[in-house]
Amino acid sequence: MRILEQPPSNGNSSSPGQESQDADYDMLCLSDELETMILARFPVSKHWKISCLSKRFLTLLKSGEIYKIRRVIGFKEPSVFILASGEKNWCAFDGHFRSCRKLPIIPSDYSFEWCGKESFSAGTNLFVSGKEVDGGVVWRYDLATNEWFRGPFMLSPRCRFASASCGTTAFVAGGIETTTWEVLNSAEKYNLESHTWEPLPRMIQKRKFCSGCYLDNKFYVLGGQDEQKRVLYCGEFFDQETNSWTLVPEMLKDIRLSTPRSPLLIAVANNMLYTIDAFSNELKVYLKGSNSWKKLGPVPVRAHVREGWGVAFKSLGNELLVIGATSASCPQRTRMNIYTCFPDPHVEKLKWKQVVCGSTNLHPFIHNCAVMLA
Image (cartoon, rainbow, N blue to C red; front, side, top):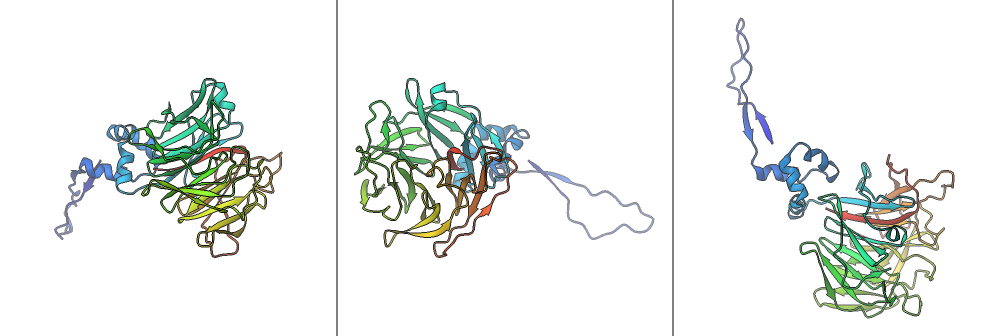
């Protein structure tokens, strides 16, 4: 990358009758290091444009080096990955939903296409877990190369499990073993740098259809059902410092739960835990000191119509994001609606802002949604 610099003026101006002379410019070159630092700050949605102009940046991009630099300098931005009903391709949006692109189709078999899936991210990788004809499988999308890769497989193949991410690490726990159909209490974590899964201590409670989040620097697993299909109102968290799990009894006592409903819709913003009550269609915030939940008003999508299924609820940094169908939607006018808000646990009712996006001509029923910070 080069810039033109004009030498400082000597203060003389051309006198009458004299021709003005064009200024001389010197060509200066930026160092490769400085150029890379500048390029690393460009939005992810613009990377494809810059890679067309610079072969060196293309190399840095495809090797994943540019994203390592972004992590070192603390420059991250969210990308939202969505699989809507009726779509074979995942769609990737920037955090402001100003740009949208379709990912390549996952090169899997027909069984995987129609099975239930779980999704989560770690660093620049999006994971989609499901089941193929031969058994459980994990597909990994690499943001740097724009490709899908098969594996690495979890130590225990599972479905209907809880997951959460922190930086380049992803945590999974519980669920159903895909060959024996046993309800699990095993847990593991994925490390992006080594591309390996590592075992964690087992949870206190076996649970399936559970939800996960990263809160207070701990991996929380909430709700679900035990091996007798009994609804669980307890939660538990894994502390990496002590390498142990701690049970939180009656953590969900203020949430109405039942077996037909979807796993608990939860998101963390500003280190506070929020949930959408799929029966009342209300947003609630968890009050850590009293182990209780406070109502923050209704959400602008119809989470209660299908008991939570088809709604995406995620955090975008300090914002909450909800995607789905609105109460005004009708079968003749089906398209997904996107809303965000800056949550405040001290107010009585939150104000939601509808995001205007030109690429939302997707079905409002969302099968999977994951947010990547890279």
